[in-house]
Picture 1 (cartoon, rainbow, N blue to C red):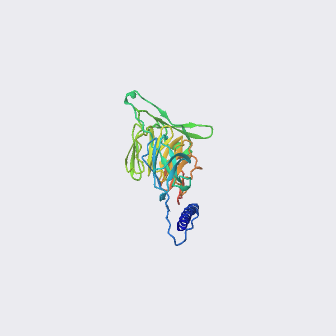
Picture 2: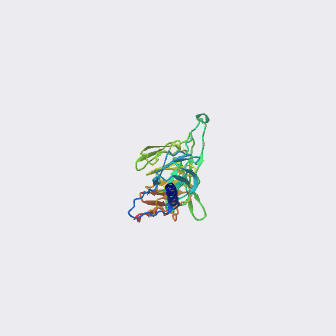
Picture 3: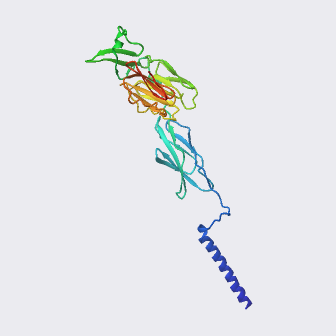
Length: 343
């Protein structure tokens, strides 16, 4: 009888143990945590995305871990709002890019189960310009290339006729010809640029912390601070004018514009410009004079310094710290920007 009681007691104890384990597993996800009960804390920290090692075809990205804890994460890399990679580390190198082009990157952190922990900060990266290496064997003293800018046709007042225009009006690369039409007098400006054996217009420009020089062969040299890449002009060719501030601007013989340096406000976004005859670099913006006498501008517009779209008959532009000035063909001046009035 005693043995039978011990046996039933043993069965009861085993049943209670199994029942307890089963209930703990079953209701584990429904466990109540009281206010005075300590629990593990997962601290969410927004990850910071940065770029480095930028070449003409690649960008190396790195970021900080999004969540402090033991959660395993994947990171989706977005380039121009399109996913280009998913990695489980904190770095990624994007390759096969186009030189001298802007790309926008964002990182999204997700758990292995697909739960999103938000996106990183957005960064804009501009790939380096592809450096052109000339083969000395392909050049000779007999090379003589001539490039021509589009003709600039501007109205001029009769007062200009009082100036002496007789004889050879050619000075350096600029030649002016007065042509009479039905009811107005127009001035045609043509620019001829000699090739390797010719003479480009030599000039210099001073930026905030650097100096730029245009050589007689159309290349550009620069010295000074290079914290924003404003000295990276070694690959430039066929340049006819330079201007500098926090960034460096070069006008090419075909009327297009190249830029390097600080682009925090979009002041380097001149890729689509054409038919430009003069450029000027402001502190946070860039201005270009077109062959038709109109003006284009990019960069910061926090004080309306880019509002030049209605300007006409402009023959020279200059960009200041937070304003832009234009000289008209009739000798008057227009200006936009912060608290400027020109009478």
